[in-house]
Amino acid sequence: DCRGRYDSEGEFYPEIHDAKDGYDTINWCATRPWSSGRVGMFGCSYPGCVQWYCAHLNNPHLKCIVPRDATSDPYFDGGFMRGGVLQDFMEWLLHTAGKTDRTNLLKGVELPEAYKRLPLRKLDEHLGFRFPFWKDYVDHPTYGRFWKRTSVHDKYHLIKVPSLNIGGWYSHPDVMGTIRNFVGVSTKGPRGTRKNHRLVIGPWAHCEGASKIGEIDFGSKAKVDFLEMHRRWFDYWLKGKGDGMTKQAPVRLFVMGANEWRSTREWPLRATRYTKYYLHSRGHANTLKGDGLLDQNQPRSESPDEFTFDPANPAGMSLGGYAEVAALDQGPNERRDGVLVFSTPRLRAGVEVTGPVRLVLYASSSARDTDFTGKLVDMYPNDPAIFLTCGIVRARFRESYEKPSLIKPGRVYRYEIDLWATSNLFRRDHHIRLEVSSSEFPMFLPNTNTGGDIGSETKTLVARQTVYHDAERPSHLLLPAVPRARK
Image (cartoon, rainbow, N blue to C red):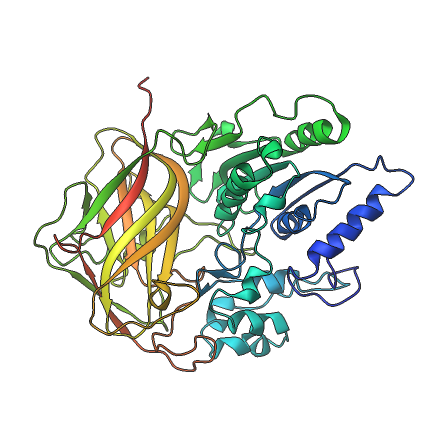
């Protein structure tokens, strides 16, 4: 119950008061007659973030933390923004905005339709609420002091507290925050403490631990006793009992597809071979029935692909939210003309992809500002197109998140799209597939394409997008391929 939430007094404003309030709460716990004076913290999502806000203050009573699905920076990998693109965090606000009665205000609200009402900065009022932080977030689309004040990125060198970081490959948008926090404290923390951190990522959705998501069952190995994992960590750091996982490799990753765990000492894996898969077509890669091809051969003279992006009718099939059941099959999305689909030939041998994924795209638009998206998909032999990870870039932020610049209609620009990370074995007879579009709704709220202020715009424009893949403009997917031992 953070300040202003549920049974706590005060006014709630996300992330601003949690460091100081957390420090005081730790002191209170440590000085009770029943306390040993050694305090640990745990929790998922926002309660995971709270731990990092407290950790850099190094309260002497705080001996360890177990953040799960926690972000590292609310602008880049939080539930609020992703590199200048507003995310579906109104859902989170409505889910947690109740006070003493713990009411879920999300009930009865049709958010996909509500998001289409403009201007966005008045969305809370459209829904009958007033959230001052909603307008503040919408009014700060660039990366500056407003966002940096709650970032953990510049605090890793201060953090001495041992951390057990737990995440899920399908915990969007928090999986990258989990990874970045682990890497940050393991490489930038005080030298004597860098070895005291662990990372565990499984095939789970946000704050979930089931072995099945949507259409895919990852098998019995995906089930983990989280209570026992916490107990081992706390017993060691709070009571001096056991080994607290200190004798095992610091990183444990679940490889989907192979449905097995991989233990390693670093992220990314040292054996990673970053491999370029180039986009090809004869200019008709639209939909899954198009001629889009993905392979390791550099393109020569090829016709570009075109599609139309209408912000009023955005494409996308994100993971389900708090009130929905997750669906991973992207088939319905790939039938839309505004989605380009590029697939490898049927794989003759399995390909493991474990690590950060990037898409380099050469594209032009008829608009002064727009978005481009990429999505990595595992195409099964019996037709399901299973979502793995995705990313987005806003054209005005292609060069800088602090100093945006609009694009010139018709000019070709190079875009780098961070598709975050995954660990998946594309098995024999599967296809590696890439979707390219300009929206991933409702995970990301669509660009108006006007070039104006996103929060204040009341109108949208239809944009004509062109994606190039030729010798001079070789659009490609960069995959972290990892060699596998033959069995």
